[in-house]
Length: 119
Length: 467
Image 1: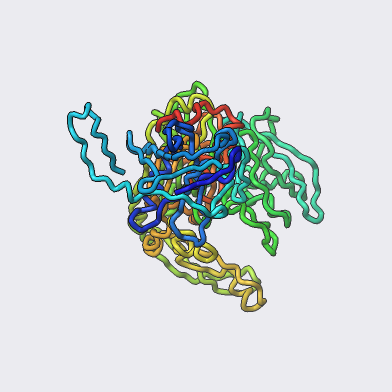
Image 2: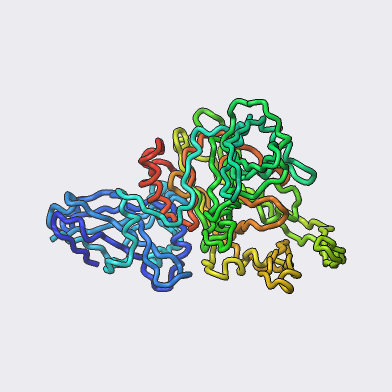
């Protein structure tokens, strides 16, 4: 997955959504997300030097097209101009720390890597 | 979520667990217009149209020593306004209006209207304008014991919200908002049942007081009722326990009360001629069985309750109901067992509009439609969740008995086997009621943008509070 943002820009926001492939239970996952801390780290693609470490991500609601459907939430991160000041390709890692069960976390994305390109 | 940490115990043993985390994978979303941008803007508050109550009880006392009555300049033709004012001892005042069958202190509201007949050939109307002023020594016996239902009986304007007057608890009738003169065009101040749920938000400062002084801080339901068939499913309170938990209490009914209805013909001579009228009398012969439904959070974090702290309670019904579904699906229409037209003769002979009175009672249909009242109850401390209960049954105040159904802040009510008793002695700095359920995203945003900047919340960065 490739995310692109211009050097020195804070837009667009990085927005991640749960893959809705009917294998998961969105409702119960939302319950766990409710009491979780979510952090973003960014590492340089080649050197693997950290560029951002444990920056706080936020959650926002996805606009519903139909009522009575299960709520959907996005994990979002808004960069500031300092964070996008150096052009390069970075690997992004999002870690969800679930507070309902101690020492339990989920590292995202799982199957496909997230690359953040500052251009 | 499962995990695997083979280095735990210095790698001496494998920690194998079934891992299904790949089912919760994430992907980039490229749609820039399908999300709520306002909840991630932590520099600006959100203006909620659903915010119905936004007050403070800061500095309010729990003591009512005296009550001040001030004359109401009623917009009635020929009314003689004399700017009268009286101050009475509160106990004497409520005892005067108490009568067989009810204690007036259980149902007094700040916008009650009182009738004074102490001046010959004149009637004056009074309202409660203050508490705890010095007594002037006037006797109360010139007041009629008939209490009018609210100031709005004299005006086409909408009823005013009951003033707080510096005293806790503060209560008001939920659906008290219609003007009394037709057409009734005002919206209710607080709906009896919102479309999806509700949110209450409070900011406390307990100071050095122990948790045992916390008491009941919120009550919803019928006020001061002692008959279980009338208060069953008609009461809800939240309070602090002695060890610092938040406890909710409801008395639900589990078996139907039994009623016996008798019909008699009664002669009526008031029209100048004999007319027999049907009088239906219903007596509750078996009140049925009731249970106290209750739950509590864990002990609240002492770090986060040292200074001001924010409690948010959300009820989110499983079903969103609109229009006619609100009273029909698990709503108060299921409680209606009888409909009486109180002016049948006038309807037939004088073509007047029928005056319909509905009788609401606990019954089988109310029980069968319980699914329509189920939802999730959530409690948050400083914007973070601390309690969640699914399949929690909503409380819908119903018209049973003659007590008003109210929403009350800062104290409890008498009756109900004393489970809702007790006033909150903590300083209640802010109270809010939204007639929609906030999800956790909005609760957090509201806390960060509307509560934290305006109060001394000591929870450092809130992330440091480990719930």
